[in-house]
Length: 170
Image 1: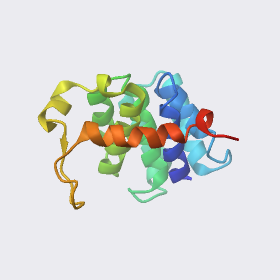
Image 2: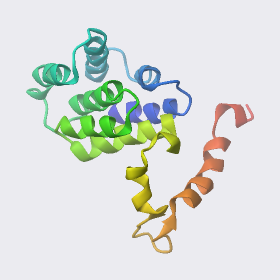
Image 3: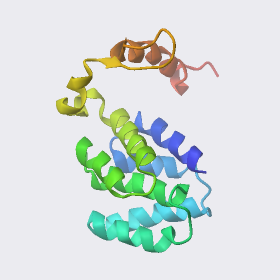
């Protein structure tokens, strides 16, 4: 269910107005009675109660961490959702919270950062995160080392647009 949720989160982020809307849309793709849905509903409830991030993270740890391995989907998806909500539209805070939460830090930071990037676009990314890259990506894929990030995005965009519901002939 975690894979379904993460894929739905990325897809919803393309059209959502904010993180909350993307997270709620992604949750509709997870079976309602699943443990993952329960944990994500818990995150919304903690956020709506006005808890600060540390209090909410402690609650999630108490409820789920003792039951599952540190790389288990349930508490890590909860941390991603928490980072997007408590990050409040700030990229640095969002990925910082995702990593600060512990557990599967690299995956959580990447998932929260990806969803944030889709929601906010390059304009939402602070210069100190993107300027040092000089629009280049390092890759071990033959022929793609030192490719321009902007070129890869332009090559990818037609595939994304071709697969939107409005572009399909049904």
